[in-house]
Length: 119
Length: 114
Image (cartoon, rainbow over the protein chains, first blue to last red):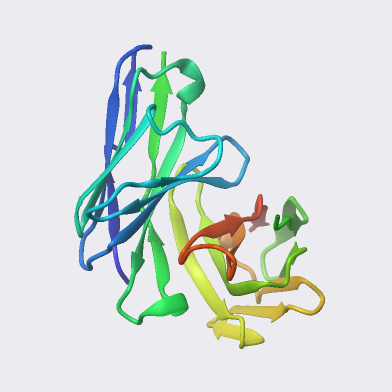
């Protein structure tokens, strides 16, 4: 099946710093990628939809100036957590839609996730 | 707003037993349903995708059904193995949302004991 990678897998940073997380589709092109956040023992919550060549679409309640998303190519989307604080500590997962089949039958493939800890 | 409920929240069974995981939803305007597996601290692995026009999908020991009229989907795992231990998530694509926007349930944590 299709592979989506994330880098880094873990990151620990000090409060106030910025952290960049990369999401890559390795063997397919994706005009649309998604960024999710997951707290312990809770489900995934969609943060934003990343669109290649245009601005990301953020879900209600997600601060777009804090979570910067850039989808610079058909295989790469980045999420930058700016001025991170301890409450931003979470598991961040990206997914990419394989659009080969077209339409609603597309399958999403998920990355392995990035564990962010802000001290 | 779609409400997605997964019951039970946790389940422990001895090896060899069949697993039945339930997912219920309130809004029948779903387009696709997808079942995922998540291992601790890991990303998601897609197990089965059911389109709204279908009633079930099968892959090996896994079978997933979809009943839109009752707002329910069920994942069956036959002859469970310790390797099946993981959290299982159901997710929906809504026709009212943009393509690919998934709404997830909270998951069922499964432990299969040897």
